[in-house]
Length: 322
Image 1 (cartoon, helix red, strand yellow):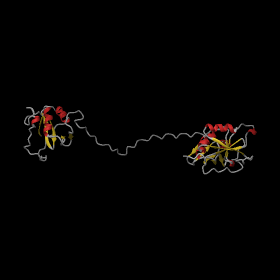
Image 2 (cartoon, helix red, strand yellow; image 1 turned 30 degrees about the vertical axis):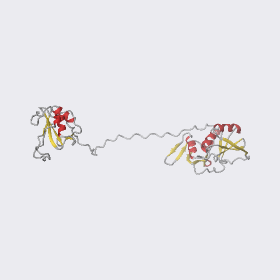
Image 3 (cartoon, rainbow, N blue to C red; image 1 turned 120 degrees about the vertical axis):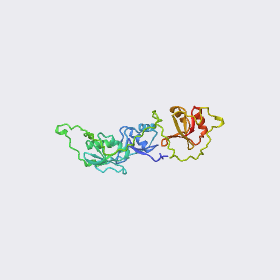
């Protein structure tokens, strides 16, 4: 937590010196700057406030601060800023150029001085030189900065131009700096087709997803297939709980349409109906997956021949060795 007892701002009111206390430095400074006619004297590091002390005390009390002291101030005027070098207030300074002369705004915190510079009309920041370019007469710029409570270091080096009123001609009006024109858009560039674009080869969709008729079945190459681990005399009779109907026998034919499936590595075929109807039954088996290389449907290992035969027989088709 900040120690408000140490923060104070010196002010002069009616020839007496007071101190603004009771808050943080930045908050008290903002309250002082709200007083009309306040002026910061850089040589004495004190704010001069016009008006009566009682009125200013009440105004500060509204913001939650107090006015302490009241010591008479010795009648001595500070040396003019043009006759002596400006006081140094730490290392904070903002570099500016006025009428082509490099100057610096000093006498306060960096943020406060930056806000004062940004309030000057026509100011522009040069990113190359890291300086603010401020158009206008140096004397006017100096007065504006001192009104904000800061000093323009080096302003005394600029010789003010003699007034033109004595010659009977009106002073020239202020002309703002020319607005930089936007860069023209780049000319049209022809697209470069020299680089090869990696476009993947077109792959035809699987026939069971594109709505087209399936490709003709390829006859199995029995001489290329590896022998099955299941003995040839593997019983194909269903369990007693799901006895197939008279239509579903291993020797009966089911027409020309058939769908090849694989149960636990054993090749089987589903016959006895139209291709699309039998395909719909196969797709209802959970975990089934179509092997595009072998053109066969793989049934999960957790499914037995009996369970698959029950599903096929219930739909009115036949399951037999393929």
